[in-house]
Amino acid sequence: MPVFDSSWLIYLGAALLLIAYAIRDELKLRVLIVVSTFVYIAYYFLLPGGPLWDPIITSVLFVAINFWVLGQIALERTTLRLSEDEKQLFDAFETLTPGQFRRVLKLAHWRIAQDPDGTVLTREDEPSDALFYVFEGVISVEKRGRPFRLPEGNFVGEVAFVLNRKTTATTVAPKGVRYVEWDAEALRKLGRKRENLGNAINALLTRDLAKKLGGSYRPDDALPATPRSIELLEEAQS
Image (tube, rainbow, N blue to C red; front, side):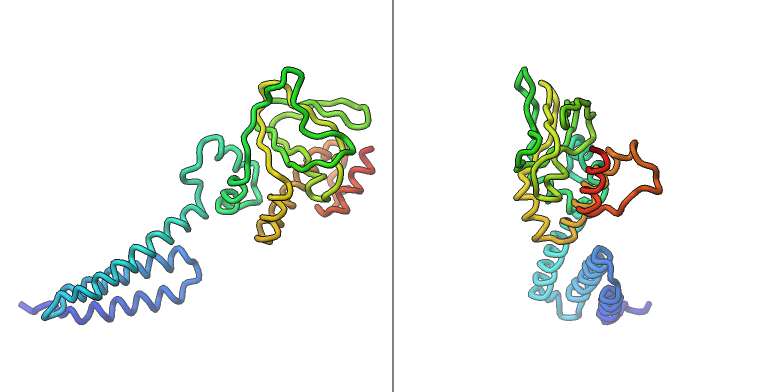
């Protein structure tokens, strides 16, 4: 009966590494590196005169590090470990990846309006240092003396955030309304640090504004989602 030649394991491990380095997807690359390392561990263990414990221990450390990185990649690509409320909020951030959303989530403050007379979120023509998202309930909005209601699932203060200027309406959250609040400057700083994330947030907020104004415009009247288009839409709406 032929004896298994463990030297073939070194060639198999090398082949897996070559395949891994030819793959651009980091998740698949890391998985192949881990599999290749296990093959090398088997080689060091079965080698005549072995096991060679020093390279085995070193390889186990490499596997542990790669497993840690794989966990980080999984968090970047999935909604694992998010609560149900956080998953619901993530659905509103449709332009962000799960990893980008987690960074935004770290800056979020979950609030419940407590004031019996209503909690003021923004005041018309005054600076605002926060961005809000109406998570549950309906808030009241007043713009140039015209009152209306804004249901859950909408951002508040998005124009002031994108254009970095005064707010365009007074918004009040009645008692019991749940909303999420972000410090505007902290969110801008995050967007400057991670440009792709900043662009995704601005695209999301301009899309939210377009949704609010969509009832007043035909599809062929739509403008590109830019700060200037927001100003034009506001002028047309007023």
